[in-house]
Amino acid sequence: NGEGVYLLTAGDGSAEDRSPVFTPDSRLVAFASNRAGEVFQIYTVDLRGTTITPLMQDDSDYQALDYKPEPLLRLTQN
Image (cartoon, rainbow, N blue to C red; front, side, top):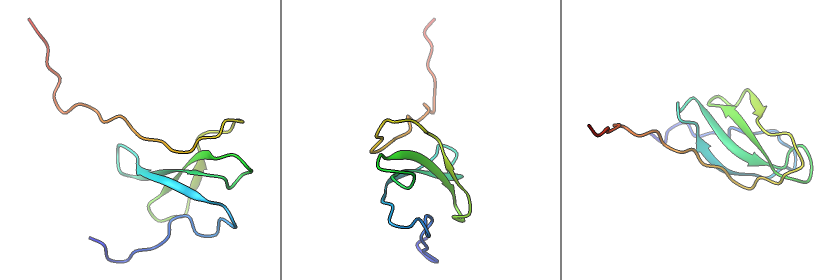
């Protein structure tokens, strides 16, 4: 509802966090960040901002991400 706005990724030093998206279950926010070095990796953070978890740990430079929505209705043909 827009009330009680706060930063989920506080205390990340000079890191740049970008491209936030809700996970399909809306329980986490996934984002790209350079908090662990020079390249951007993918992380998730819970909605209280207390637990940040790396999803990718390689040499690739991930700038953004998106989730493919599940179809609401699956149609089959006879």
